[in-house]
Length: 437
Image (cartoon, rainbow, N blue to C red; front, top):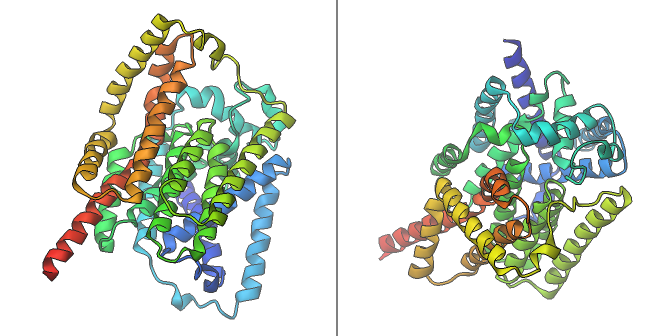
């Protein structure tokens, strides 16, 4: 019974942590961001706060001070806006209620199974323990795979430490929260009624949920961040007024920064997403320059910080010199192995079984829109990345594929939910046109 209490209080803490600032901030601040709802506002708050937590970590400031700063800012917001705060104006948001309920359901499953995956117990948990025990980034050199980014374990340690500091799995409830938040967020792209959107979100959860995603692995964070990137990219495509693109671009750059510090492959996913977006949406010259400059800044910060802390990518991961030796037989065998396992793991993922045929149908049936090209370009880049990732590995390629490819494929699978959304929205539009005629 005591664990149920801890789960309840942790969920309450996380939900308040990311939603309370929204209720205290003047609504005028959100007017520039058209078509965003309460779930989107929570997503923006989460993105901002995680980036601030990241800044605290790179300056070796104890995460407890981040919490104290958060309380101080909340106090300031209450003092400055107390006359405008009216609890009667707070409306129940059905998406938020579903978010809390399903976070609880999945958290109970988390507490029941409570085992680490191999990668988590050999790498990620020790990084988490490092921050939980008030150590800094430099101390990560004492652990295995010190070149793994630290942001996921940092967040894990923060929500393990607050509000109770009792059980480590309480920190992983954040992973459940952002996973559900991202699915509810992408469901808002549907041009349907609220109830129908919620049904769609629940179907996506049932399609993707697996305890192993929350067993200490960071792949679910990549999955969720890619979904949030897609949500705000969709808002850019849908907006008729381009004057506010700057704010959405800032949000996307902030997501890119989190991606690049969650897992090493997150850098590539962020670059692929921006590349696909720039070449399919008619941005102004200023917006394009800002995106390019922003991505360069994020990459430079990553490179300079790794150099400052003397973090080098493990040379055993890739043997490019040997790969480019052009041993045609070796290259052919690797290509054959990668293709074989790709077909197996893609066929085991129901998201791809549904969305890829649907994408082909959309390309055949409907006029080629910018947002469809956005999906198509990312799909091509994603497939190329998967092949190159394993082509550059010389030793034990098959073993590496069997250990990691399924997770690599899952990381970006949520992106392709956009295919279902486009199809449903086109179908709804067709029905409305038929009724009018």
